[in-house]
Amino acid sequence: MEFIENVPKEKYEQFVKNHPKGHFLQAFAWGEFAKKEKHLLPHYVGLIDAKGNLKATALILEKKLPLGYCYFYLPRGFVLDYQEKNLVTMFTNQLKIFAKQKRAIFFKIDPDIIYHEEDTYGNVLQEQNEQMVQFLKTLGYRHLGFTKNFETMQPRYTFRIDLTKDLDELENRFSKTTKQRIKKAEDFGVEVRIGTEEDIHPFYQLMILTENRKDFITHNEQYYQSLYTIWNQDNCCHLFMGSVDLKKIIAQQQALVEELTTELDALPKENLSKSQHTKKQEIEKRKNKIESDIKRYQEIDKENPSPLVLSAHFIIEYGDKAWVLYAGNHNLLTDTYTNYKTYKEHFEYCFHKHLKVYDQFGTIGDLRSDNPLLGLHEFKKKFGGNYIEFIGEFDYVIHPFFYVVFTKLVPFYRNFVKKIAKKKREK
Image 1 (spheres, rainbow, N blue to C red):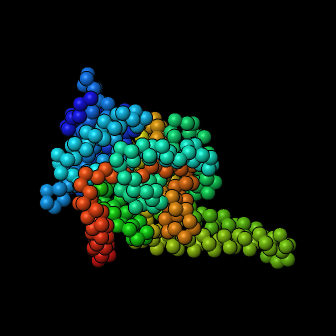
Image 2: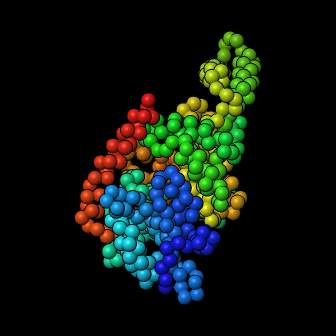
Image 3: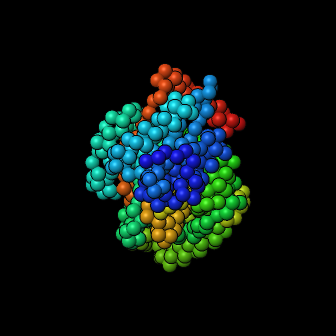
């Protein structure tokens, strides 16, 4: 086997896209995006056999550090068959040599290897993969533990749906509440369309609202613009925009008020029976609720464009897989459940495009009731995916002294940067 530092783009992409372990975070385009927006230097490396055929690849993202040092991050690890342990060993040894040449303090991997998996009904599909964790440790990797929230570079938990199954079977796994809310969104006339580059700005505005509501800060508008542009050069990503037409909703609700008024008029004016009295109260209660809603809708309609975009989701495709990478939702009109309808539309889009895997890209492992992230988990769980836990992050240390210094100082620096970014956003 021969280690090569610069795998040609076409050869690299063909291998990664068609490999079972291929992931969008290992794509050539992700390297170019990381170079532009994260200021990381991408290296597209691999192992070839005697015939020149690729047997393994990795995207290395190099982060420059003071004094001429750097560190490597290999998002989602290597693209190879991890069951071929000799191949994993050989690739690790070659990466160690390459890291020393580039003065890397360490290199980090977080392989797309499942540690534990359950189906939507809680049945265990794969027991804890301790054997793979121990194997990587024998090669010299340091396991950074079984984190439970979003402490790592990439989510350690996710929900994935196998799109090779029948669509009716898959949608039957949606929770009862989810089905009801999708139906309600359809009753409200929620429409979902695939956006264009011009929709980056409204998408970003919804991301801002979502981040402020959940008290976290992610990226600026240029970040999303670059991702959309770079990814669509060779691959495919979409913005799914869910919206409502308030004028239509108001007209629909006014028609309901008229129907309820007719029902009330049909009841006797005096000497109502017990059942008639109960029915009258129920109709009046419903009528008052709808009239209150109409007033609210009219106020919102005065201050906002029509149609009003309430939900925007960023879906990225690579090979035969898709990831729900980002989702922004408005604070207004949550009772229309536009978010649920938007999810259903891009789920069906991915199915009809004959993709094989639909990944909701991130949830938690800490399921205590007081975890503020539990709502995110419960929402994604409702769509019936398998609950997956990955084996986590591993560091291969080249320079122990500098590694200790780096791991102690960097968390303080990152927290400082987050606080500054948050203050800027608040202003």
